[in-house]
Amino acid sequence: MRALRLLIVLSLAGACGPPGPPSFPAQRAAEPAHSAAAIEGEVLGVDRIAPSDRLASGVQLRVQPGAEGAVVIDLAPDWYLDRHGLTFAPSERVSVEGSRVAKRSGVVIYATRVKKGGKTVELREPGSGEPLWR
Image 1 (tube, rainbow, N blue to C red):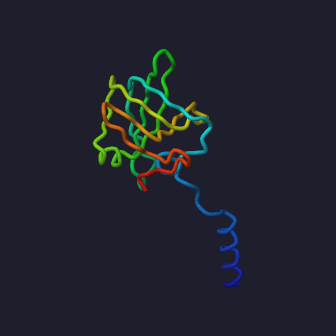
Image 2: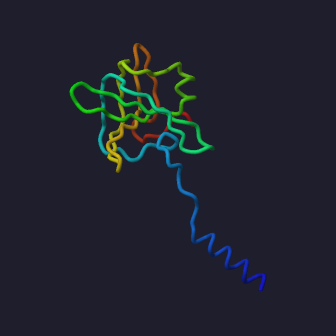
Image 3: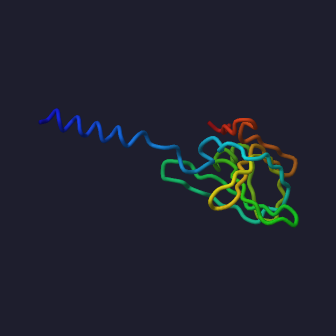
């Protein structure tokens, strides 16, 4: 009877499968690139997104590139940007290169490189989208 219970528990655990990847894109490699993107514009807002208690919060920008609508940019964990001396505030100008990805909530650019003033910081591998903060 005890062996049967153990077998049932193990079968159910195996059926559930392994846990999935973190839900916040900045904590894992960017999703496959749908298209390359390069924008320059004014920062409209800076958000800190905390996906869970176990993962570092990530920085997300809303950028206005000229007459186009605002674009959401996923950058990197705040500690990684702090390490490189990068902070962002509304009204500042930035240039971003990355991968434009269509999500249910709208289009997001996963940044591979961000430039503010004279400082450029690499965030992800351009080809794979693999985060450089790992």
